[in-house]
Length: 619
Image 1 (cartoon, rainbow, N blue to C red):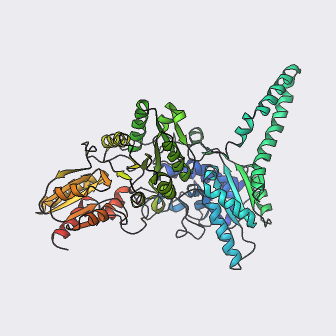
Image 2 (spheres, rainbow, N blue to C red):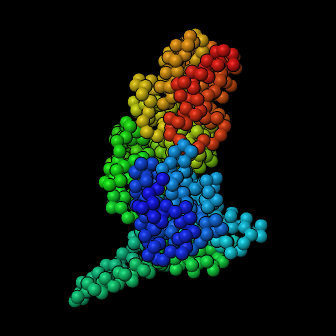
Image 3 (cartoon, rainbow, N blue to C red):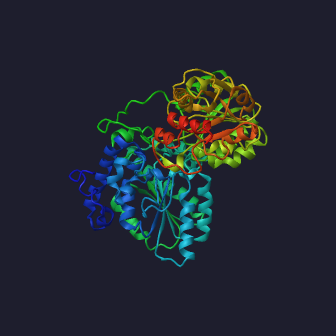
């Protein structure tokens, strides 16, 4: 339960309705409560901290002026929705945030009618809002409804945003696009939009004019005050005219930039926009991590957190070295030996472990922002130009670039290496972030090779192995966090027999290796002699090695959806054998711990042993 004395306004279930009667001072006190609550609550539950601290005043102003049950507020990306959840009566549920059966860390309409749309990936809000506006218009809905897209500046780098701006502006849809400009996506914002001012600054005529200006100022007495005044005028002009011309050229009225933490000013502005019947962009400038010195200093580190001390911000000890860190460190070491190696990512430099690479080889590190399609095709161009790109993208985000993988990488057989982070079950983030579908997608690409190392040593060996074979594209999959406890390095082989058994065989890969070995021990205690085969390359599946090394029914245990799974491919390749699959099932999996998801799908040691026993009994 939420502490009613500490959070007197936030603890009220109807806070969103009641706040419409608040004075400005009470609204500001509510903002302070939200900020303190998030810092305290997320220290235990984990979640997205810095991004939510930055949108508190913005969210309070929006929901004070608009009705989230009548008007539609669409988030992009969804991780900045925590203040919205608090204002729509869900504060008590934050003790179970991102846990099984608890609140989602993203908007979820099944959780509350105030959530307009599921939003786990970026750059989607404008398209969704345009669709909602058109549905309201065609169905004869309330013409006074407003459709608001709250989009972070990092999501503006996604190609869908340009497509939606072009369409919605031409159609004159009544959209209010609130651009939350904090200079960040997850890592620092990159791309053309952020570089508009840079292009102006490097223009030769502009630089020459600056030299003349400074020479003149040096000759004037007491020029400091005049210089300060002129700088303010210059900044007001450039921060208004340049973005305005971009958005207004697409049919949107541009307003801003405005202070995204000025509650009074925001409320005045949004009240005025209620009467607008044309598309408008409100450019708000905010600070990611606002209100806590710890997050203000290190917004990237506090983007997504697992746990920390709420008094100091000190992170709680982690459970072993993450495979992401191992990947980044080893790729940096490889880059020292091979000058043609480059690293490409899409706004996930820190999460993918590439911070050290970026520092050491800044000219060979490319973060393209939330633009996975561009990342893949750019990597293809690099490979065609003789470089060896390693493209680090989370499994859930790699889905967005399938056409580029198939068409731009696959057809030419280019040696692009996809480093697929967060593969398999992913804790906390739920349906939108499970890494269960990339193998079904990647295995459709002729010439693709897919590897699944189990531990840090095997990840390093696999990276060296794919570099040594430039015959075509390859993917290396590894989960979030640490790998398996299995401590051998077998990655030089496509498959290895870890245990032999005469009654049946367990086939697995990656971190499930531990569970398969434990299941074989459980089965031995039940009178069943089970073998264990560990795959290191899962596509093309080494069917002949599995056939020779196995006995009895084959049970393939894997953190994948059934379609395109290793079990399917082994069954097709070995029609004379009994091949069965044990996997995540044909469903979207809700949030839970990785261990909880593994157990729920029967992929823990007991679940594997139980299913193997059924097969041996002929069930």
